[in-house]
Length: 611
Image 1 (cartoon, rainbow, N blue to C red):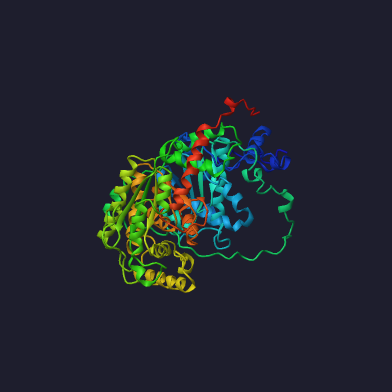
Image 2 (cartoon, rainbow, N blue to C red):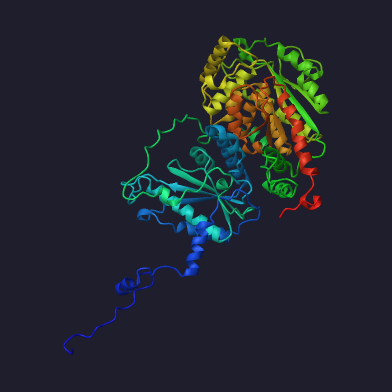
């Protein structure tokens, strides 16, 4: 054998390279596996990964969050494209705006479940405000960048981004951190909210924090919404073995919040500067207290949500004796000259005077509820009426078919009048009940909603005070003409309100600002107040935290407005009176929700066995 060269060992490869030998791999093909203990840990993380909806308010340490993001960044991607980007959100203002977008889509989607719509609305689908951190996972599809694999599978970058999300989720489970994936949003709205470039895709909004629940099964499976299918039912060998694909669903195009509009005027910015988002930690404390009451968790349904939202706004549950203040704003509308109502414009002032005397529905309700009632003239025409507070800006608005409803100065003064009334009532009241009086205001509200949402006149116009078919057709034509004439941009809600609204709607927007600044909840009335609230919340999103929908009116588009606001109505009695009457009727239910929370016994007090 001396004639053969000596065999030399292969030198070790540098760190990071595969130093295994073919012989080793042939002898033990599964030798790359983890130890049994390590494998069990991996499988446990997969089995126990849950979509968390309830969170503690304890902060997630920055080092831990960065470690989880590092795990996400280890995800595989075709061509090592690494398309994921992470936007970490901690500001309450941003989270509040995102929650409003999600609540809107929840209400929009509910009817698609038909008989299961109510069950869907009972599900808790997000914890945006409770979780201390949100992470928006974005796919960066920057144009002009050539990526391996994109020409064959166009969406491979999206799939890679989903792998990053799963990495984050599994690492979080191993670290005892909860993650909730929120998917009810319109991508354009999230782009606008976070300033994302148009070529990006917001794939997931993740709520991140220490969990306030430890579900043993997925929540929807636990609630009977669906069951985990056996793995064999989703496997095909060699070829697809399923039935034909269903026809693609028909979708209706809707205008999103869209790109950022022009900056709000300085006077509005100054008024809105003091409006801070409500604090989710107070809702968490109230929920902890509610879980100790003698009842199944969550069994009071929407009443528990009312109390939690009230606590977010004020710091605690509704007081033992609510002190409501009613602010009813009255004005005339130039559009009434187009025969869009059964009643002449002069009726507005007559109704306002009767309300101030306590003779209309809102007068009777305010007296019965022991509430302070302010009927405020911000835009009536003719002589001032006794008993009606005089904060008149102008004797009615312009005809929106021919031009803007208000000048810039009139709009500002009307908003400031609403802020002034709200500030005064907040000094002696626990909450505001708002309403309006004005012949023709469902027409201006319909035009405002059409401009803000992009919906056609046919969808936003109802019969108001009881129009017949000819009157309804005339009203729709007026709304179409008004929107076309004023051409307000949806991204500029204040311009929409100034050009298409009414003086009382502008005052209502101001009242909502004033109440929110004083951390006073507001009970909204019907369609017109909802339209004003939609404009106000688009211009100052934190205002929404303080709003409660008293009822859903008979005006068809009111449901659309409430969905856009992301608010569920307390009552649905098919009312179409206005004046704040529907909101006033809901007030006792809110009072009783607080009574239940404060006065029910706890399990430890009642001697009820919880084991």
